Length: 337
Image: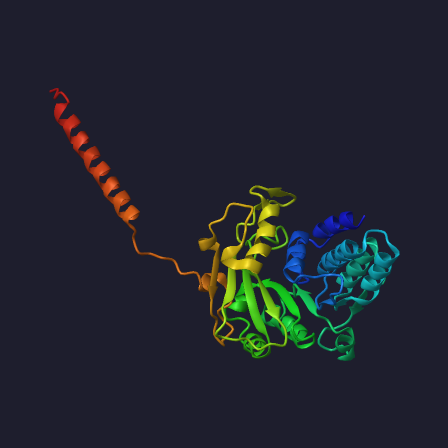
């Protein structure tokens, strides 16, 4: 029932542009949750809850971990699952329509206890966040908000445990200049660990927009002598049409591979076919907060190689021979008067 409801949500909102809402696909919310290593003890919040997609993915990983540790259908596991649902998930959503969709979605997923508050993220009592004491935050903020929504992640990182992890998927112009107010302030208190460039058609049919995922560690000022991991995930293996998602190139493997690349960098053991040197780079960022995207760090080597030279000579000789043959044939043609 919950899965059917999620499918319904894709089309119930139209293109989502009027509300400034674009729902994150479940295979992306799952990958982001896995990147943050969410487990049975995590305390997860989403400050722009939408349809609760992130909370659902987090909850599923938490339950899976609890069952792995204490066994499936045991009294200990059932007690832990109840605690997870009641105490370890927090959502905040201002939009009335989305709030109803989120609470309904959670109920249909077997959880009527999670705390989803209908409120303005920035105007809620501080005790809401201090009492919850999150160590993980997942976000897809409204893209119509100022700086594409970067104030949401800044606020969230400022209101969670030191050493906690956060991930936000956002229009990547936020990381190349548009987040000029929030980003430098984020780096003063928190660390940018990774930037993952996503497919431009990821949110179709609702929107066509270039996004990136930024991963942070809370409470530790960014060390500008440490590298950031930049990953190009524009080829995620999926072909998207208005009503259909087709796996064209081992998409499930690719999503698992991105988690592996995030963890192990150049030493990653991959399942799909990649050229790691083309899609992964480690580089430094500066204090401006305007150089957070893959394309700003991938150096394209334009120096010609020996193979390039040989190919050029071969093509030139082939062209010369072709011209000689054409001229020879013309000379042999009979001349009729």
